[in-house]
Image 1 (cartoon, one colour):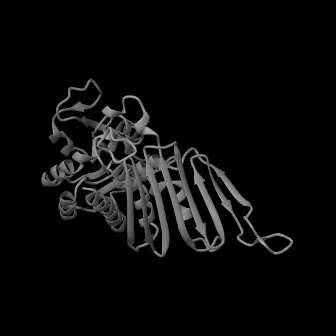
Image 2 (cartoon, helix red, strand yellow):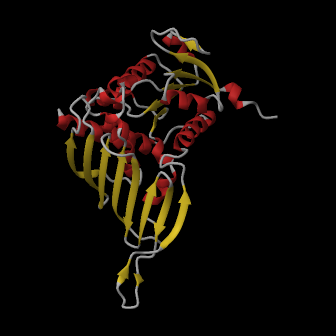
Image 3 (spheres, one colour):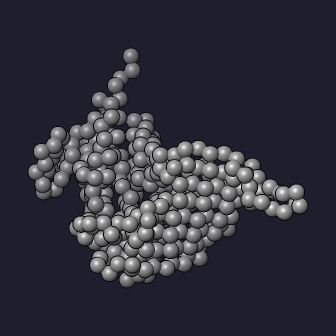
Length: 318
């Protein structure tokens, strides 16, 4: 009889609320949680500890705390010769100085949760011979957060670059993982619709990647909308929180041989653009830990490159 891998592998968790809880709920179904750490609060929850050194006695650590503390814990674990695996939420770091330091301590046991890589839409960004060559991508990700009551106390409004590190970074990373090319010709427009917060609440960022035009609009100042439109030489693909639609073929002609919009060729329902990507990402991490394998170096470097692009954009805003 095979051993129970869940009982053999244990995890330490840094973070316990909001998004952290969603990850914890996935983790506890897969492996044993040994500790949930907080540096100063006395939490009345199972597995709780205030002793950071307890994390060193685990097989893997999940860094799910606010982004500004990510590097502190990555650095702590490294300096204390931690031999386990590290799952860290995105962004890896929040400033360029820490990014330089991170590159020096990075190992193939590090993993950064760019979960959109594991979404349904990822495969549509890779050129499909049937649909032709991808030539343009339009992305919109917006929510009316700045109009929400009590939002002034929310972490989203405390940093001018929250939209970059929390939202745009997902799409940057998704694009980078389609090939080994680099992003070029970046152009950024930013605007504050509301002057009540430090947050810059709207960005339009365009760039070129692998000869593909990429346009992104990220905002907390307009209606809820998550939408990705892909234009290929022989098709158009429309993705939103409800469905993926493929319009194909390109040469849809009327009786006078004039072009008409291509017909709906394929439709698949979605729960959201992100869908089960967090579940898939955590499962991928745990499978690597169970098999004692290493994480892909190119994926790790793309994680850092995505982080750098966002930080470079933020620096221009200072």
